[in-house]
Image (cartoon, rainbow, N blue to C red):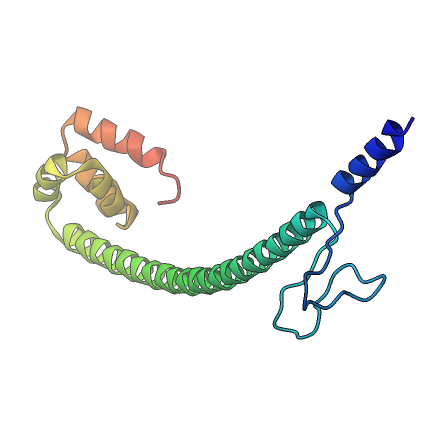
Amino acid sequence: MSRIPLCLAITALLLFPVSLPLAGQETPAAGVTGGTTGTDSEKPRYSSVEERRLLVALQQERQNLVKEREALDRKKKELKRLEDEVDKKLDQLKKERLRLEELLAEKNAAEQKRIRDLSKMYEKMSPEKAARIFAELDQELAISLLANMKTKAAARILNNMNGDAAARLTTAFSSLDGK
């Protein structure tokens, strides 16, 4: 019977260690399990290894969270900077697109003027000479020139062309989509 209380006492000591002060050491106040004794420069005392492990784990987790928050803030700033950069580049691209559209419109206008001028020249040529030249021209250019000529002048040129060439130009001209 005396063995059971002794086993219980040993088990209790193993489960709940009690730190006894050595000679010259202060004893902690009753009911205080953590914190510092005496000065703030001493390390806190824990009532158990598990409590110390949990507190260390919590401190480590807190440090990790702070680091993650700082990294997140850096990433947010970088994303904002990149977003601003992309917005600037988009604005530049829009300006360039508008400039290119203006240049293309100018080019088309100049091309149309040249075609009108060429059409006037071909109208003033003899129909036989103009027909020989039209037979050698690119079909699209020939159609554009015919479209800008007076009807009588275009008819005289087609009349002087080879039958097949005149038929091809007439067919292409009739399917002109408002060009």
